[in-house]
Length: 243
Image (tube, rainbow, N blue to C red; front, side, top):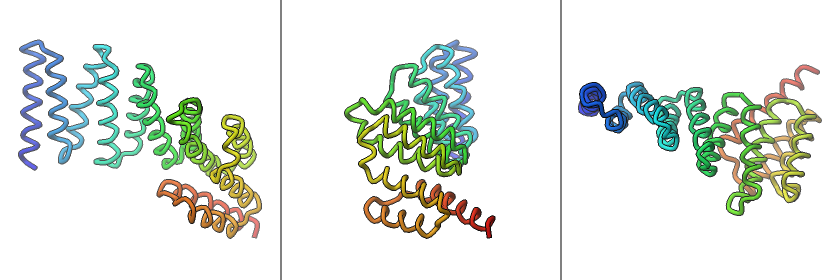
């Protein structure tokens, strides 16, 4: 632990020399990214600070592609090493925007999806929905990506269910069928339709049963399970309100 911290401090001193005495800010930015790597495991706050300085340099130079790559690394540090979902989401969003402006659509979309996943877990459902829908729309005419569209629409639909607004959820499903006519034939669409029905009927058993059936065919991942559990709990609360 001590050696990685010392290495990070040495890189920071070197970067300071490169900036102030040698007037080599490009070299200093590269050195700061080395400091980030040294600090990453044991001193994540110091790692983040160094990488932010390097990113600032790249943005000032107009090198947004490089800045985006480092901002993505920073987002991963916040998410994985620090468990700071809010800061991670902000960093993913910034990096995605920079990639998008640089016409790197695939890289941008990957991060917009990451942003959507984290936003939903933080209960910012509308932000999650808009990002899933954005990526679905940009993927629909892309032969490599269009097979994933049903997954993005399923996730957006689950977020709609989390809002508790079944009118808006049904309207969204209609717009998804317009966007991708083949969506209505998918198991994902069937699941969403069944769940909306169960929610409207306040039928927790039906809700659980439809999920169980779907899970037999396509395993529900942790993200979906977490959010669908919230929807199920909402049905419970509504039922208690009327009892």
